[in-house]
Image (tube, rainbow, N blue to C red; front, side, top):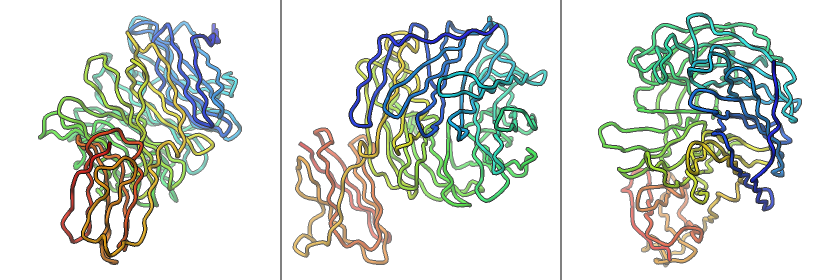
Length: 489
């Protein structure tokens, strides 16, 4: 028998400033939020409340554009989680999750599909048991519409019970917009020792294919790009051996042959050298370009998960966080605004009191902003829920490009030190391209712009930067890279 619990909105604060806001409240049971979608009037956010180490109840939130929200927890006689969603265009959301299994282990035996309205009522519901001997214990489930308007779902299943061990099997479901299953396919063969951990699925523009991202379909165990057709047949697989990635994610094709992929990467020949980046990749997995925007030192590392949110070609949000190892120190959440050409338009760092935050997902809002959420740990467990709403103006570092005065051609940057404005002299020829970036002394990139045929003076407002020393870099095609430091006071 099903029962629902409407959570009391207690211990809650909502800070409003124009269209930016923050929602935060404590939860008695551990909780984390992992996926959602925007329906135009607001945003769905889904996740799970953990009663103990193995038992969980699905959790849902609907947030209006002004920051008002409702929450609901779904209590059953079995475990359940809500993981990912797409908007159906009528205000409702198509949501996929996992449920079932016994209450004494961490295994789930069914994929769970619900159609939900903004009041967080279940309009329609389906449960699809996994074929024996498969089960799942991960919430790595992704979905997208195909080019016919059906929903394609990608999940990770296994024959094994032990957590974090998988023999690597993808299951792909095709459903209509009411959640009725049209087709289902298991892919049990050809996976490497690392298993088939999926990290995303997205429709390929101007084709009948879906692209699958993750570690699968290659005996070497590297991450791969795979394609399936309308009948869920595997038609092509391309490994990505140049990227030692532990996570990669996309929701944007730049054109019919290139897409952008956010990735957390670990370089094995340097101890603890993690960095987060956005790669431009072609349809066959070849490297085209990259923007490395956050590199940590040897003691800590950066991480990112469902971290890309595309609004338009000039408004793409990326979320990552600075991870301080296994301790409970508060950490920085680093959010960035980029465009389709991998220009870094701005950066925003977020912290919350004494809380350790691990963003798991960001998604766009109807007004061109984004919301970010995930796991938030104040003392023990995931005992805080925090949702941030930001707009592009929170990220952008204002800049101007003017004609270079002849008297200044011998300089590189001025004034130095500076309190607010930094002028960077650009001297590239008309046929050259130039890339200008500003980073902190730890290599964290804070600003980047690309130009061609500039011969100008780039003026950057650095007033929002903390006091300290920063590094500027000017790279011109066919010329030596110029680097230097400036001081912000």
